Image (tube, rainbow, N blue to C red):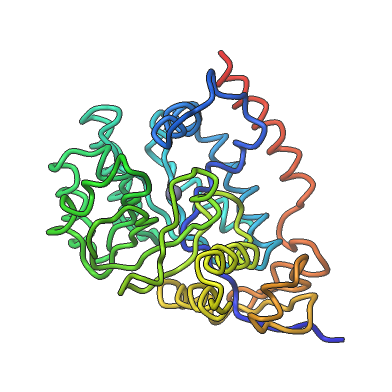
Length: 341
Ligand SMILES: [Zn+2]
């Protein structure tokens, strides 16, 4: 029986740098709040990244995306001790595997004004040099007003918009007021769980990550914005994220249909229209949301991106999956060792 054929899937918010986080040493104490999850897990990891670990993290993340039928990734990156050139490393790794990527460096004042300046410069260098992406910011609560204005200004000047976490946790409730005069329709607003007003832009909903961080339900259907789906770094399997989005919606409203969560997946084509030209042949006969919401283990048999077959017979055609996994294990060990010392 022939499998269903769809365009490529789009992950509208990813952190490729988190691919090597799995198995990292436990935090020194159990985080009690979302702010502590950031401090004790993610901000320990990002300072330990260097260009080599970023490269293999991106290679592994891109490979896993392809294995899930995802042909386009909108990535948000931070590596405070390896800022310059980091977006090129990610873009090159994705190109090698054959996956499309939209890059952003998450500017923040967590490492002082020099760190913020270096992050802004990396966005500008990459984007003005012809790289595909948006200007990244970590979040309003880790940035000064001056930094937020500079980021918004650069996004407007280049015409690419801004990719920012907004009110993910209660620590960032002031984001609405602080971003109100800055945000525009081309912004990618990530999470919006505790956003106290509507802002212009597209909202990236990340249901699994929000549940994992215990930040609450974003109720994306209550927003007037276009809504898209992201994984927030937990892989790039969009059918999986769609199923989680659907059941989380259903938990809130027993009359919810999988068509709503499916529309969030489809909305991503407005951000990444090239995905519509990509083709995924699945190992399951139907791409109907009512089928896919209840059918697990649906994987691609064949993927064509930009006219090239990049995945066939369960394997990538341009790279050696076993080799990428072996290198990623090596780099993860090096990274985890750095975290322990
Ligand atoms: Zn994120």
